[in-house]
Structures are given as C-alpha cells and as structure tokens.
Length: 207
Image 1 (cartoon, rainbow, N blue to C red):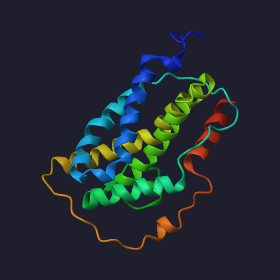
Image 2: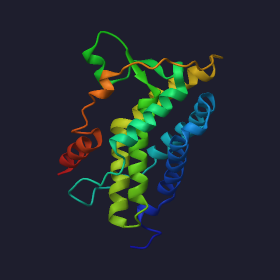
Image 3: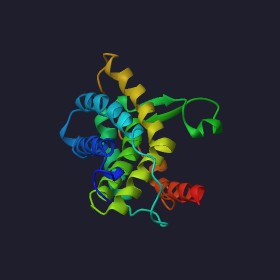
C-alpha cells in the first residue's frame, strides 16, 4: 500500500505521535524539572494530546493476539513516584468522574501522578510499536491507542486537567508531603494489567 493512502502515515496519526513523544519525554525527565514547571508543561501538552487522539482514524486490529508491551511495573512505579514527589501537596484531588464512584458514598481521592503514569504506559507502548515500521504492527498500535483513549486514559487526562488548572490559577505553592507507608501500592495486583484486560475485551467485541 502506498504510504500516501495508508492511514498509519496520515497527518492526524503523525501529529499525534509527535505530541505523545513530547509527553513521554517530559514525563521521563520529570526529575530534572520543578513541580510547578511540570504542571505548566502538562497544562499545554495534555489538551493537545486529547485533541490529536480524538482525530486518530478508526481502524480494525490486524493481529488476533494482544500487542507487545514494553512498559514494566517497575517503569510505572518509577514514573508515579517521581511525579508524586514533584507535585507534592498538589498531587491529590477529589474526583467524581471515576468508575469506582458507585462503590463509595462520595468523591474519591485521585492522583495526578497515577493518572500520568497510566497515560505514559499507553503512550510509550504505542510509540515503541509505531516506531517498528511494520505497517501491521503500526495499525494495531493506532487501533489500540484510540480504543484506550475512548475507554480509559482520555477520561484520566481530562480529570487531571481540572486539578492542574485549579492549582495553576490558585496561586498556591507546591508543598512537600511526608513519606508514609503505602500498603495499597505494595499490594498492587498487576496479574491482569488494565491494558491486557482491555485488549481482550475490545478484541472480543469485534469478533
């Protein structure tokens, strides 16, 4: 197929790749930035990434098996921990748009760092698959990224934007949070990571 007619080389996909790459670059180098600087960078990147993701073409998966994954649990934890430290007292916020809200009696406490680590996991895996140059793999990468955007990380992105907007224009300064034991993180069950689970569900829906 001619590159000009192949949707994986379309302008919308190429522009999304560029934005996703910027997001991953800043996320991976978060330790070199101040928390308030990183907040302002995300304030600019996240809306653009949302827009470009919404313009990704709707494709059908090529392979029956799930896509290869590159981001490990350790990678996720490193990103989350670094961002959590950088965002300090600005990291946690009350969330009313969460699938777990029905299990509670009120808003949940959510975390910008966890949202960004989840989004990073999808973006990095997508980029590494796309960069293989194999059109079938690239097609599946685009398909999965759009599905994950619609069903998972798109909501996390806009949820975080509310918290980031509120912090930036509140005039508050980021304070440090004393480290405490976090049994929830230690007991995190990664036997069935969200990406693998969503791949199975989404592929099953189209069969």
